Image 1: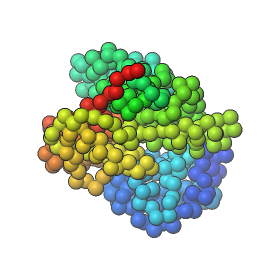
Image 2 (image 1 turned 90 degrees about the horizontal axis):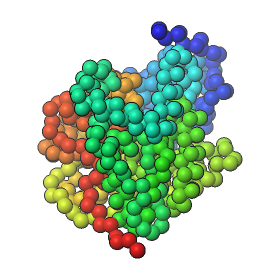
Image 3 (image 1 turned 30 degrees about the vertical axis):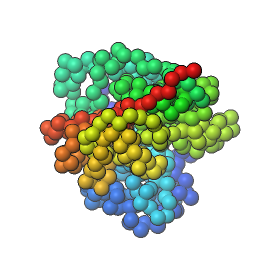
Image 4 (image 1 turned 45 degrees about the vertical axis):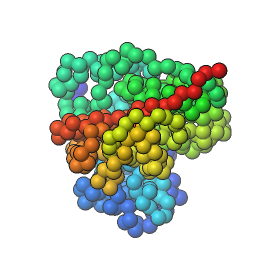
Amino acid sequence: MADSPPAAPGPPGWNPAHPAPAEDDIVKCVACGLCLPHCPTFRLTGRETAAPRGRIAAMRAVQEGRAEVDATFTVMMDECLACRACETACPSGVPFGRMIEAARAQVEPTRPIPVRGVRRLGLTWVMSRPWAMRLMGLGLGLTQAVHADRLLPARMSAGAPRVRLRDLARPVPRRLGSGPVAGVLRGCVMDVAFRPVQAATMRAVAACGHTAVMPEGGCCGALAMHYGQPEAAKRMARQRIAEFEEAGADVVVVNSAGCSGHMKTWGHLLADDPQWAERAQRIAERVRDVLELDVPATPCRGDAVAVHDACHHVNGQGIVTETRRMVAASGARPVEIPDDGRCCGAAGLYSVLQPEMSAELRLQKARAIATTGVSTVAVANPGCAAQIAAGLREIGADVTVRHPVEMLRPVVPPGP
């Protein structure tokens, strides 16, 4: 069935029925341009409309009633990777991450109804149900096992994670160790395509003297928030908060950069909800990316390992040295990738929604890794891991992608 035409744009200004970029955030941008060299899409295209400054100018025009949320505005917001490199570079402290999320919440109601339906099905229904994610993972694993994924469009298969059926059949311990309780996010993609990382995270948390507990719940809501579905993101946040509270978690450990970055903003996300605001802030303050843990481990590697910095580690969380510390704790020698920390082009669903720019960024990252001469690259985000692995396959580089926690041999203390 052909897509129905997009809804006719309304009058200039924001749609009051949906979140919008705050005026106080918009006016912080002084259009100095210091963000431009750090923006991956601007570096690829050279277009002002593909730069943070241009996107904020478009938001300001809508805010002031000089423009509307139309097709041009939608393209500008959709082309953004939401990598937040501009935030790190900005001397004025412009909170671009939450601005782009709010702008996309404005765009979402203007999309064709079938498109909105598919996006809502995936982001708010499938992602929030672990059984549905496992079913999708099984289907993807079977498809990849018989190489039928080659028949899929490149945009669907290039950035898809490799699902190993033997990993899916191997359960992850849901409780391990002794001591104060540390809740471990089960998540969505991590629990389907990165089971060994999940198990390694449980061992690492236990080695830190905690009882690692992984509640049965799933997605944290990061992807829904990134792609214009804030109500779904709030619903998933409330569910996860309740689970961690029920588990009695003194700390919440997350092994995905995008998830830890999002969960640390739960207090802001639910700030207007009187029943959840304090609870959300309390749990958000307890969130730790697994890279932030000082895991006692026995060094067992001696080779060089390239280190890829996930955007949602560097930008927003300031996690840089921690990644190298964990790689070194495994006994490996961390090696820098000569690409100035540029985004790999994964960015959640970006490889599907913006395949051309995503592919170029993927190849740039893979080639930069290949120049280091390493056999392993450490990557601590599922989207980055899948994207980089695809790029390395495309250029024929024999480099293995591993999560830093997966490389550790943690020293787990004996139980009571």
